[in-house]
Image 1 (tube, helix red, strand yellow):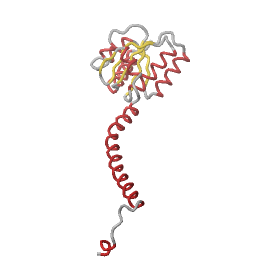
Image 2 (cartoon, rainbow, N blue to C red; image 1 turned 30 degrees about the vertical axis):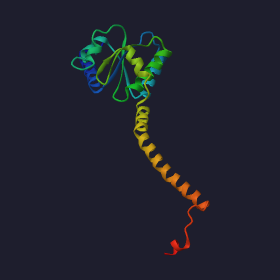
Image 3 (cartoon, helix red, strand yellow; image 1 turned 90 degrees about the vertical axis):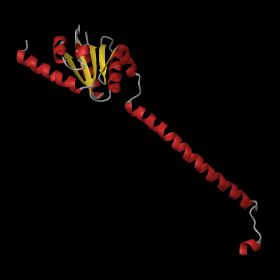
Image 4 (spheres, rainbow, N blue to C red; image 1 turned 45 degrees about the vertical axis):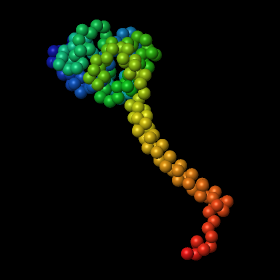
Length: 182
């Protein structure tokens, strides 16, 4: 059994993590083997997150007064937390892919950007494109009208050059010698 002082330290450490993290996924990990848990921790780290197994009553106490208090109260069963300050989509994708490969790993709830979400919203989040891909598409949409304008302006000049070139080749622009010498 842990001493009361150690439990207080654990609660305070968890409270600090919960206060600094905007994105939190509450999960159940019943019947995971040690090697599966090790793999899960690697997946979470690769997605830029942290993973922690918690006792329900300690999580409840640590989350008091934080946005996570809404989802960490009244938990049942074995509970773990995956959280990140970075991209929630990357972590949701990693956890969802892991859950598909290991059906005993389940979602209970989540918080994204300070808002509580349910299990269905976590799956929706996992199907979204990555933040970089969204930025690239947005940049393309912003850049496309300007690119079309430049292309159209270049086309006018190009067309004029083609017409003048054709006229010169067909001697359409011949001037009399008196007009040229004056």
